[in-house]
Length: 327
Ligand code: EPU
Image (cartoon, rainbow, N blue to C red; front, side, top):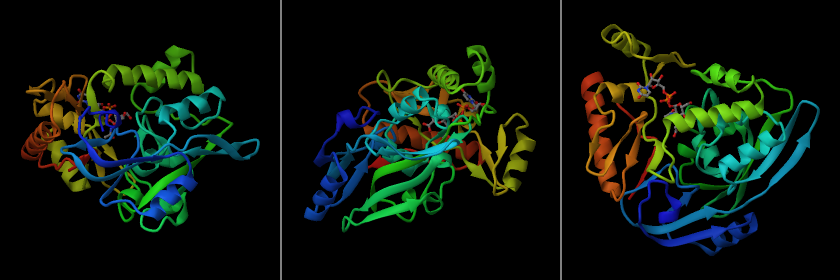
């Protein structure tokens, strides 16, 4: 699985099966595959702590197809095996608007619809129109509307009720022809101005620059991007924390609760640039756990538990992992 996980874990799966079309996936599933089944995308959100004694399925369904179009918008149907950033580049080159803030996120299109990847004020679920998927148990096809997918911060139906039950084959995105940029996150607007002002191309360049300054390149340093999610706490808990720590960043979310910055909490616990053996937190973004080379999945996992423990002790806040632990 070495080529299929950005943490760089050199583990094995009992079976590894890829397919290039929906028909091929149907016949593989209809023939039956050995359980347990693990569906992967680009492996940028996985931590293998052991070999996987089951079947790993990976879509290599490619292709882009405009399935509807008018003067304002278009629907683009994309194969689940397409690299996420190839999709963003494809849409930006054509001046289609919507995905530019999500430039350079590692991973593939199918996983983006499970994970609801997000960055710089935009989430994939904002642009997703529908998701086509096959049931792992009987290979039946189902088409999920955006509403049925129940997107929320880093979550969806496919991470909850339907976790491990479907494999995504195509995702259809609604993209705009008339711009409606999202520039309110952090210093994005300043960087875009420096690049020459708002356009899909300039936003993509700005996001690339910001990400390169904060996040490690997984080709150079094993990681899975954010290891933890930003914790969401009750308004009451947030008020109590704000009294104790007036500097603590807090962002109200739609349901009245408050999102805290996991990076800030980890930083305040003194983890910045700290390293235990071959594992540490990334110097520019403490919510990213990195493998400095040769660390086992178990070492990375144990390190992450230490980080959680200290945040819990200092702030009484539970950090929830974003990364899926396998094994
Ligand atoms: N911060 C610190 N110390 C640091 C770095 C950051 O305290 O060394 C605090 C600061 O308060 C800063 C805040 O963290 O303002 C936010 O940092 P950043 O803009 O990097 O955003 P984030 O909330 O930490 C989330 C996503 C990232 C995404 C960025 C930008 C999650 C779990 N992570 O990080 O996603 O790129 O926003 O939108 O929501 C990923 O999922 O793999 C990922 C990288």
